[in-house]
Image (cartoon, rainbow, N blue to C red):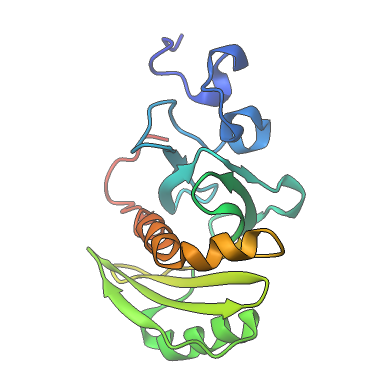
Length: 202
């Protein structure tokens, strides 16, 4: 029988979990691997495909009804976020196992088309993966787009982080624009592909 320290949050008594939004939602809780923070305000998340992990925001909640997964091939879901930094935001994530470096230009064009805007992507190189990042300012939101490509194997993620800038949030959005962008970018960099040649604690 697992000890309290080795139990996953989904196996623990809900009363013993951190009092934050991510753990209060039963569906979201299933993806969280520990009650120990990866850094302040974030917890370890493992994809349902087992193909990637990330720092999950404590104020985030996965939309269960919109969650879709086909084995290890494809996964898509929204994260509804509330916190003191950006206020309210919607994050959408799609994982595609078949995207490859050979089709990068085409896949970036397809990603932009799905967002409905031409995006000038900036490449940020990482360890075995690259982040292609761009942002869009609209009247009612600030949108940040990230295409994260696995360069050691096939697979990529499309991530859209949309901060609510409607009505009373508009002034705060504009004032904190640079800080918000750094906050979003730092979070996107936490998304890491899993090397299946290494043992992964699932």
